[in-house]
Image (cartoon, rainbow, N blue to C red; front, side):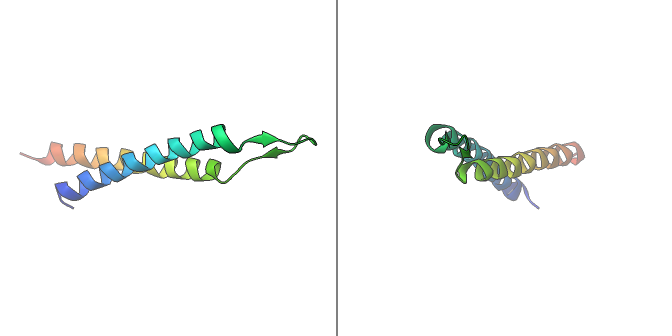
Length: 75
């Protein structure tokens, strides 16, 4: 892996984290409701938001760790 691919991974992870936050905000704003019987109705934005946020956060931590390790190994 070269520095360019690590930078790309960093940008993709930040994009995924941002998309996750956006999906969760969409869930809160538009599609969450309780019907007359007391049943909570939610859309797919909640699992999409949680999934993309989690994947983005893991990629972010991994890409930062790889950058720090490579920086330490550089003479």
